Length: 157
Image (cartoon, rainbow, N blue to C red; front, side):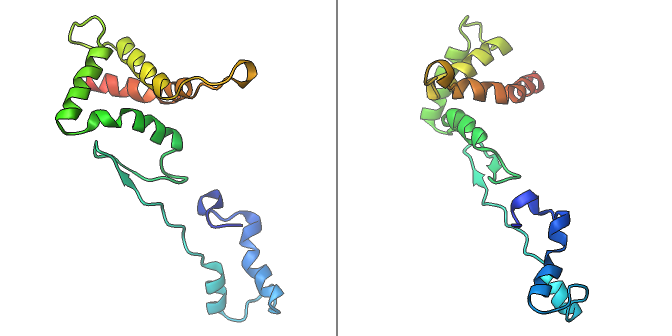
């Protein structure tokens, strides 16, 4: 049993752990030496959450079991340079919008946006291997986060 396993929840076998430890130390398994000793044995420190990272777009994200996955960090790293608040960031956003709006009507449809996101992910995380060894991390990230940017697109409309 480790405090980090299972999100800090105590399983049925682990509930008996403090009493078993007492029995190994020569104390009765049924009754600990004192209530204070029993409380000290059953209290475990809660695992601390890993420190949160602040991204340039203002989102604070922590890692670990309850935080963001490595897939999120890979996905965010692909688009984070576009969030830079500088002249260079503005220029990158204009170039990205130009790429995302191929018909140059000044609007990005959901299909155009999806194509842009997929192309960005595939350029950063290209396909590797062949046949059974084929790995498509860019395509996998696209599929994993597709519901998120569809929701964001609909909310922005």
